[in-house]
Image 1 (spheres, rainbow, N blue to C red):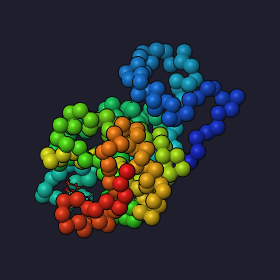
Image 2 (spheres, protein in one colour):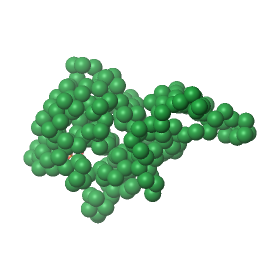
Image 3 (cartoon, rainbow, N blue to C red):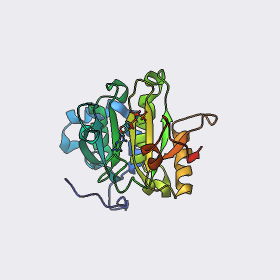
Image 4 (spheres, helix red, strand yellow):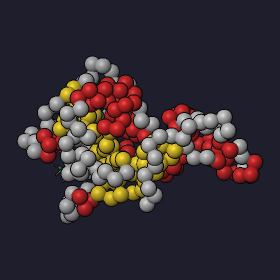
Length: 235
Ligand code: MGP
């Protein structure tokens, strides 16, 4: 496994070729879609330098897949797929795997910062919680894939500014009763960051202001009596 990348993106100086930052590049590649595939047919020697350099992300991320096999313990069903730390490797992975809406019910995807397991017990999760977006059954066809992709782009593009360090990862649960997306943060006591992250997520996902979303502590979810743990914050 490669070591985690350094925190800051390399500075752009006049000696270097123009290099859009990772966030701009993520959006460009989202717009262009398959356009980049054409590059493979050109002579590599003729390519301008900006097409040969991968755009580093601020963090390395790991994709996890969960398949519900009831004969096994919960953690045994969790499978680490791969890690990436560039914009291009993110899109290569995203375009290669099944969309969330096409997974079997009972399955999850999770994308977490490298080194954090997508479980309450991980030392970087256990004092934290999650913003939870609960979808109705119809929204699997209309919203789920867009919401999940936008959540991933927010995380890997560090859209939460100075609070991006509080992000641990995100999970999408495919469930017969309604799918869920959770974005996990590290520390329940960091209320400013939690609220900012929730507001930003709603804005980026285009969730209308009148639809509230709730933040639950993992410690409450772990021990909940009913089907939903109480909300510690709402936006
Ligand atoms: P779930 O998969 O998060 O949600 O948790 P689901 O299936 O919608 O169920 P609901 O209870 O939210 O309605 C299902 C079960 O998986 C939990 O009750 C736990 O038994 C187990 N589980 C889920 N997570 C995220 C963890 C975890 O982080 N650690 C452990 N040990 N078990 C977990």
